[in-house]
Image 1 (cartoon, helix red, strand yellow):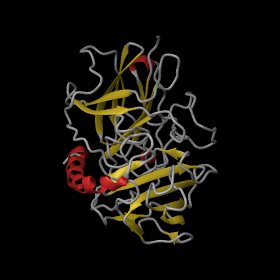
Image 2: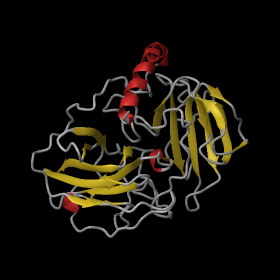
Image 3: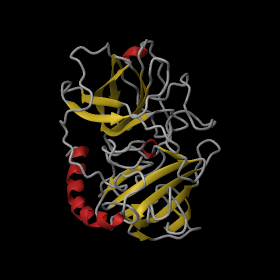
Length: 359
């Protein structure tokens, strides 16, 4: 069963409970529905916003070599065809990183964290409501990833570390306001990226099994999936914050968690001809064996306070948990169709840059 198929099934199950819960949840001041699992029913073959022409621009293909360990990254020479898209297994160091603050950190992979749910549970985030997006305008800007599982599914410590918050957020705002994440845990892992700490947030829990100040080990059960706070259905909101423990220092958690067997991910940037990051910009994804059938649609991050690139990658989009294999990414920028063919090895993250050569 493909990842999307299982998400469809789980979403259908939880939405019955979500209808009841949403009555009392209330909406944010933005007028959008509360944070939670998207309520629309997508189909794998729906027509995307972009409709590429039959003859796209030239395609550049690169097959990166997998790293021998999760913390090491392969190295590849950059290509010289940015208009066709470039693909490398690590960030392109020559590109300026649009970080909110300059951090001195090692470039490349840091997928050190365990999955926050167990091997018998669903472990991937929603492909329809990923980090830095708003569910096609239907939801709040997302600062993490949503992992849908039944009520009471155990959640795990993703690393050795210290619990620095455990309880309801009714008195202390862990999100943008109080009573947002409901029952919430914040874990500070022992490991750092460069000299900077990072923090892992578990939101909407039904049960908390730890207390502030407690030491935990990776894989230890620390709570259970719920729908407290403004959640619309049972799921885990998992968030990573870099350098500072607040809502405005989030980074994409999909670049921090260990790849699942047989899967990898695609990260990258979509830029205009002047080298500026494009926000909320659509990217259509095809599998190489079905080059005329849209497999997934992704969007670059919405540029807002609290949403930004990973300090080691400098990306403005991530397509997480894709099967190892070859994919074709297409997007239209400044009137030009851009295309990149990307081969994702098992357990790897491949970096792609899509930018036109001229306005």
